[in-house]
Image 1: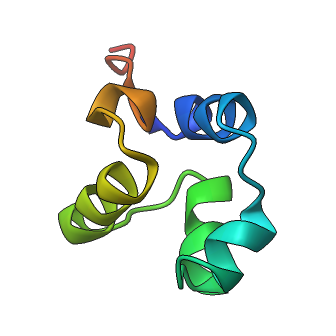
Image 2 (image 1 turned 135 degrees about the vertical axis):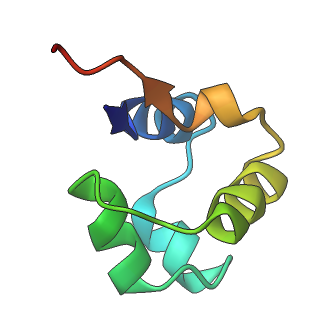
Length: 68
């Protein structure tokens, strides 16, 4: 399972709000909704977030293998 839990921690650490992502970085509310609900986003979106936040992909996503 992939979650975006590290993204919220990164935003908090960098003192960036979701409002700032929308107004200053142009992130759509639909994208933020998908991230909040751990839904699929494109690799391009992940790349954009890494560039915006000047961070590594592991600062945005966390992978945990599904239990089988």
